[in-house]
Length: 425
Image 1 (cartoon, helix red, strand yellow):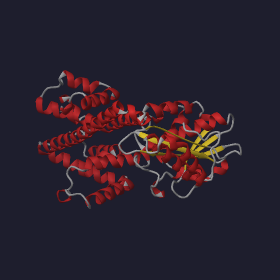
Image 2 (cartoon, one colour):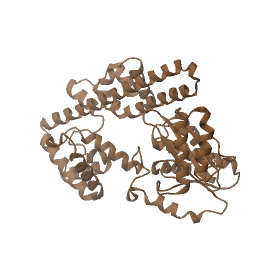
Image 3 (cartoon, helix red, strand yellow):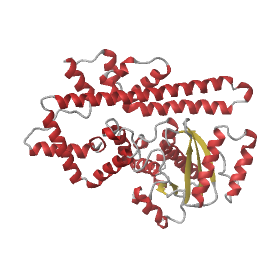
Image 4 (cartoon, one colour):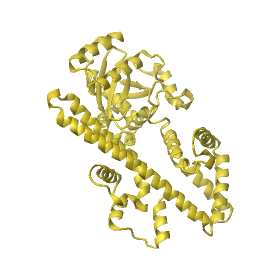
């Protein structure tokens, strides 16, 4: 788990261990990456993969995800099971699942917008999208199991080989070096491991198949500074303190600055999301879009709020607060670099990418800062209520004839009245 989650730090510890033993780099031949190629050559003695497998190996990520979607929707692709492809298949299943939810969101939005008398075709399309998503989920599980089986088999073959003892000694010593050099990281690994083993049914066997999934979760958490699914309620000590400090220093803003809070609400099975925002001057807004995760939904909310206020206030600087660390970091990085592609890891779908490209053009007038969520902040509560309203509206949970009445009721309950910016986006 430590090797997978902290690859760079562990590799450096292993390099030092090999150097201390007078061995060349890479002596323990246990590749953590490109394992399938190593396995294929080792077991068959053949360096060249079949043509269809090479195509899957050589195509870019977007084309590979397209192949996974085709596998689920049209015809099962047997070449995904090839050892040269299994690891890549397992890595990209999450993205493919997100695009499956995107199709559900599109179909759901179209069905909700239709009059009841003409909903048959949209509802059939929605049913097809759900079936595709179910197949994607099943294939995702299969990919994870096959990748784990490949990894375990190759490690077992390596350990049984003539260099198995040397590999074990070098890895154990490198892990000890890692623990000494990275005590905080080692503590996180131990903490996650202990918590997992308390409930895992395979704990008596040492959880032999769990480490890779746990390492992926830990690596994502460390990379983003937050869980991708829900970061608004994380403990304060887990949040990058620079964002807390910056929010506490709103006094550094000029008097002309327009401050707003943005929030989002994401669905479970569908990529449909709602967003809402509320500004200090009384302005509000809400709307809906499609997002691959709660983090991307929050990015959409930030961008929509900032762009609305930029358009209304031609010269004033705009500051948008948000309780998602992941979204704040993504937008902050894009504004700082002047390049929307910096946020590509979070902004998966075209809707958020288009908004980010528009926002970056105004980078010198916009700031985004973190705000601790669900602590009774008036603007945060207003934005949250509007986001949930927008999600209920787009998913058809509010009758079309009652939308305006429900919106007015929500705004008045928040002490606000519909104004020039209080319109759905």
